[in-house]
Length: 110
Image (cartoon, rainbow, N blue to C red; front, side, top):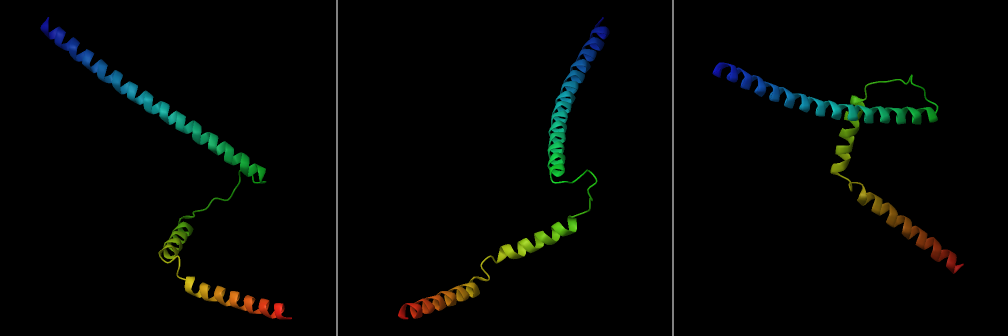
């Protein structure tokens, strides 16, 4: 009788474990289905937008990794010196103001 009870308890424990695993898998499945639905909606919106601009589904697809890497490198290079051109720009702007001021004064004298 004890052996039967032990087997029964083991089976009940296994049933609870499997039920928990099923619940976990169902929640994951629900989350994935929700994510898939959102992705499909986004794809639909993008296709609609492309059709609005006259594009069809036969768009050329190509790898942009090299372009992105190049652009990121350039962005990082520019980020380190955002005001590198400021001194020369200041000189040009100051000269332009002085020239304008001189021309204005000449016109006022006439």
